[in-house]
Image (cartoon, rainbow, N blue to C red; front, side, top):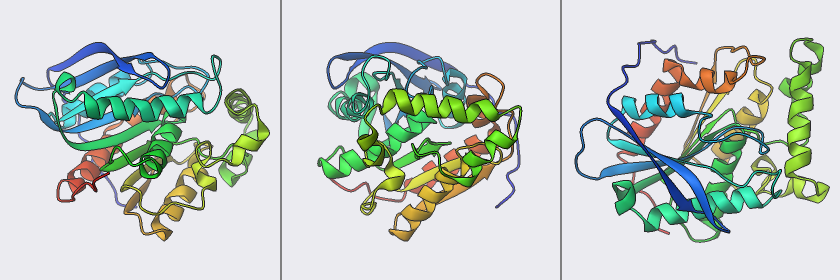
Length: 286
């Protein structure tokens, strides 16, 4: 992997605005992030979904990360949205919400100060699962067209079968991670038959062609590492332009560690580079 020079991220004048977006079955709380001086509509909108293992989390989960993200490129605007948690309604409520938010964004460009040119899905952990599934749903349902997907330490394997996941019980300070992931999936996927559904586990999908370019970030000691990298390999084998990067270790036992890891400047640099690579590409129509 290429070494990334770490430089401090200078937070520009970041403005946020809380609003409501349209979910699959009603309004959802959301937050719009923009940086720099007010100006013409931004050409790129990133729709972001938070972590929390499908059963928790909210808009505060990655607030610092998203502030840093828009500071890195004031030409982008970010829309962070809640979704129905599994404690309220299990699968497919969350993914239906996520796709509905993309559709709402496409129809409400003016409210978002967005030109409508480029739309990306993104998320961390459970939110990255939703971002990946959004790409599948947008392809299968005729839109909205996505220019890319950013998956940060995604939850993609309800079976918890990868080597990086199985290694966790041998680490006393991390043994609870597997139990936490298993409990999250039990809440999100109470029907065992859903665990192989591609909209629940995109890693199990046999139809990964015609998807937007992807950036997949894993972490050296994260239990989700192998499933993230396996998904990247599958996308590449299907001809999808995909960048897979493994981040240095982070102390996952600390609250919010995944988001803190994602905030580090090397991850932001990877995201900035990925988004810049999309500037010369044309988003397929849908």
